[in-house]
Length: 169
Image (cartoon, rainbow, N blue to C red):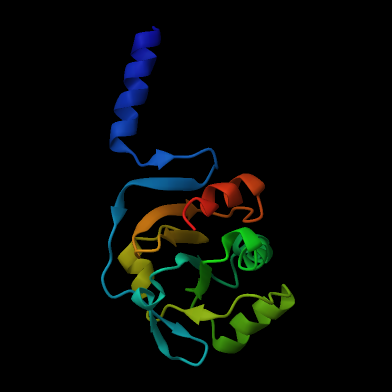
């Protein structure tokens, strides 16, 4: 029976991405490379992810109507200024088709002080990444390669998560 269980576990791991101890974190077995990942800042200026190579980058996709997004945003805000992750750049990207005022009001209501507002219009990144829901956070290493995703909400201030993430910093 033990051999059967071991065989099933090995077989299932060969087809799925590795899942770490965190309930929503999926680590890619192979790094994923994307070309031309662009999004907009609050002034409607287009930014390109390749300009942030050399940094650990988190793209966090959210919307004002998303309750789990609202729940995780304060811990994401604190993660941006975590001293253990001094090479981290977080881009919270609104994909809820909210106007700038509504999105800014959302961040102000939550007292977000360390993050800026970004938009994915016309939802090109969400399509490119094949997002199935929000919040979703995509993590990129210093070379601009996707190495993991967080599907759903997470406490970004979890000490185990920060320790794990600091390995990529």
